[in-house]
Image (cartoon, rainbow, N blue to C red; front, side, top):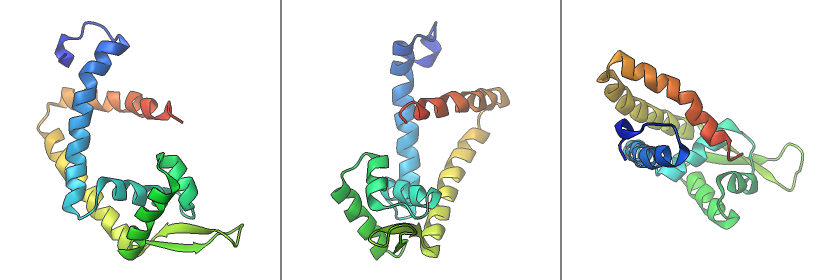
Length: 149
């Protein structure tokens, strides 16, 4: 159902209308990250580590709802690329935490720029009223994400 056909904000028809649109936008942003030579999951993991320096592989796996062995293999690949490094855990010498390296920071900046450029060009083509509507929708979309926590 197209959004223009919605006559109320009932959850089911709204979900049916928004889901394909959000998926298409997400797919395009992932494609922009791939132009920087980074998979969508790798970009997500790098971003998580940047936001939580010192995070461990287990905590990262739990946060992203991946198995620990799967997360470990992703982290090892990011380490091999020179984008992530391990450091001794501050409180527990048996554990190590992760941090983004300067090369990883540069890669994250490349991704951010590619995604923002793609999105900015399209937003500029919209009317000011449409951009205002999107700005107003940003907070409810963030609330949707926080309901999983």
